[in-house]
Image (cartoon, rainbow, N blue to C red):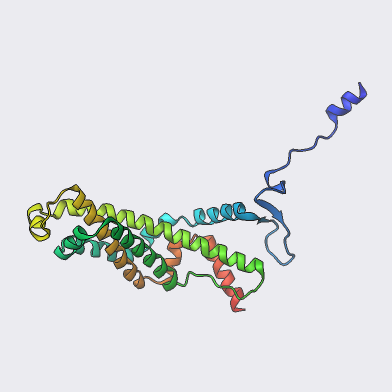
Length: 238
């Protein structure tokens, strides 16, 4: 009886927390005495880094990139509106194969991503040679590329829809058939809107040069991420 009572009232081992598992991708880590934080978690393996990367990208809210770049968006919309009513663009879109349209799309998106990162100095460089510093820099840069990439993809999809609506409203089937020697059907509308979206994305990349670095960073990063990167830059200057 006594053993039964002690077994009921005695301390029980608490179930391990998810982060206490040595095999978990995120685990508690040591904190230096000069650090302001009193708790740190470390990652290990591809699974842990992917979780951290996903959290960083989600915190940046990449879908805010498009409305945050007003000048680039205005340049892209203006380019798309002009290209949609250009007969040369009609002929090019009608003559391009699906492979070339895909290449134009990928190229314009890559150009936009690269231009934003380079022009606004979003690429993080570290002067430290430790493996931890290099991994941290690689994680920051990966989150930047993914964040800007998602934002540009959202911009491209929006341009595609807007250009398609504009083409449906403005194009005349007889004029289009006379200039391109092909009838204007739904396939031609979609092909033209697809090609014009690629052209407009390039125009948006050029228009983003009118944006300030602060505006691009505010659109690409959350406030917490901006403070973290500013603190890293200050430490690098010191």
